[in-house]
Length: 318
Image (tube, helix red, strand yellow):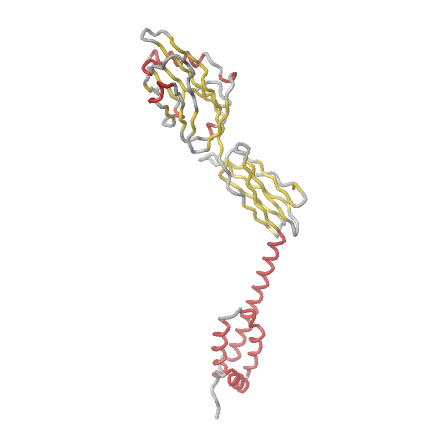
């Protein structure tokens, strides 16, 4: 064990990963990602005498961290940094073919912009070095997650539109446009979820009547844009129609109540009410407005009797 630790300390001390060149791969938050690594050597790989150290240098940190360790062909993750516990896997059955790739599971926002690299060392039976590479397979990981489609709501009292989206990573860019180009919104509010690390964003912009506005959310890592468009004119038409329909229904209800009050003692008028309500249930309530006004004729028994005789629903007189 002492030899294992001494080798680990030596390997970590001889390389400055910030001066290495690496290739970039993108991983999805919460998913797994493969850090590819293959040995290009004519010398055979003997797993029993192989030592591997997958190592990470996190952004804004100077000291490297052991991600996964293999010593003399056996996994030994005593020096593994706790952040990577139960999150890494190598493929032992492929080591002899030179496949040293690492599977990193359950990507987290803390993995974003981390550079991973491999220390490789192989000895013979007398501890003589056969192969060694202290800076293999440098890979920088960028973590991302798609945002939800933005939701745009309109406040007609203040003439403002609000755009909200959530569940994405990293911080997005939000823009407002209308028929004439870019709008100047208020400063977006971005809040990071303390559990998942994802971002929630909201933005407000002033609007005018008969305006079409579009809110666009751009994820810089995934190069993905989601947008939603709203037309204030169409919404106002719908609102006005709804108000008019509501007024019509209230008017009908008031007239109907007055009719019942006038005719509540009239037996002959009740016959018409029964038949008319049945008829109205099969037609648009608002289209019966004119007919209902005529029920004021039921202010006397004589008029009600004449009306019901006309409709065929009243009692006949002899």
